[in-house]
Image 1 (cartoon, one colour):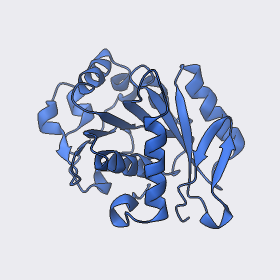
Image 2 (cartoon, rainbow, N blue to C red; image 1 turned 90 degrees about the horizontal axis):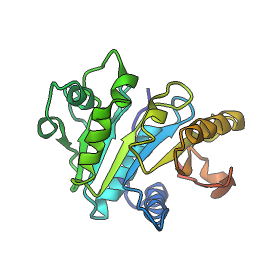
Image 3 (cartoon, rainbow, N blue to C red; image 1 turned 60 degrees about the vertical axis):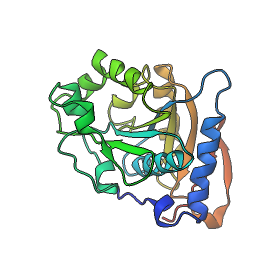
Image 4 (cartoon, rainbow, N blue to C red; image 1 turned 180 degrees about the vertical axis):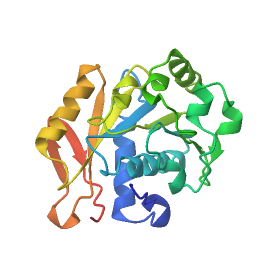
Length: 230
């Protein structure tokens, strides 16, 4: 299970926290014609740090004055609620199943301008829920309420959930763990997203050893070394 390190709160002046601010800036200027308001974050495989990246990116977005919502769409193995120490008794799955209303499910994160919507009750049909028309309408409604929405999704090589959200989002960030994921897996993850016409904004090289350097180019996308310790 991924352990979330909210480095942007724990040590806001660190190089790691600054890397998230750089990532924030690049996302904000990623498109001239249409801003990336809803961004999905996924990884090739498990344990690469996608939820850590999602949470820290949401924090720095909120700190810039953007009204931000972080949604845990990993309905199978959610972790976002643990990072922010909030309840996961009611969340996204309950909303989509008609068992809760948004106003009761959304929670304050403890960070100004940042709210969190946890995954909620573990459903028997996560893929069907995320692919539903209700999910699309829900995200559309949220666009009028928030400046920026981050969606934490399951690893793209394991399940189809991340791909199913392509119609709801403006772009994807692919999180890859240095020394953990191989090039073949990274390439396959990219192809799976491109198969559903997902716009890949870039990728984050996570768990990167800061002693080895800074920025890399890969598959034509920019990898921003977060310089997180292994």
